[in-house]
Amino acid sequence: MTTMTLEPMHLMQTPGGASAGEAVKPADPTYRKRVEEAAVQFEGLFIAQMLNEMKKATDQLKSDDSGTDRTSDAMLDYANRAVADAIAHQRAFGIADTLVAQMLPPEATPAAPVAHAQD
Image 1 (cartoon, rainbow, N blue to C red):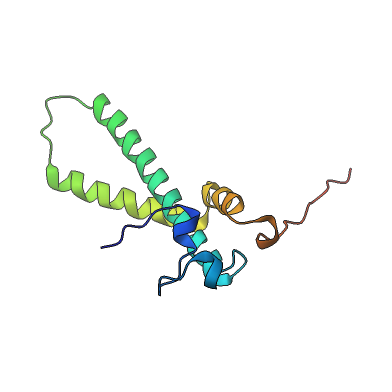
Image 2: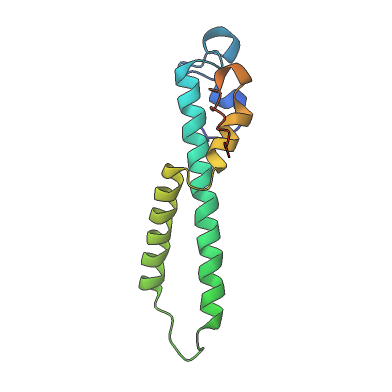
């Protein structure tokens, strides 16, 4: 069983096991896609953790006499994860974009057009 890591060398390996120098170049679209997928997954995990911490904080504000319902907690955790994944796929927080920019060499990342405000 292979574990997935966010290390650039792992992302540069091809499914056949060839190393980065042999078959894959950082500007390769397949490599770029794998980097972007990993970055979006990381952003989703980050947002899910943030939502989980927000839930813990609001749970502490609830009265203690209410019983805990594990089923509803599990469903809420599932819903939070789904929301986090949706937000991450929109790249709303910009975490994935930042990771992609740091993991790909400058020639592999497209230059964003600079908008100048004219007054």
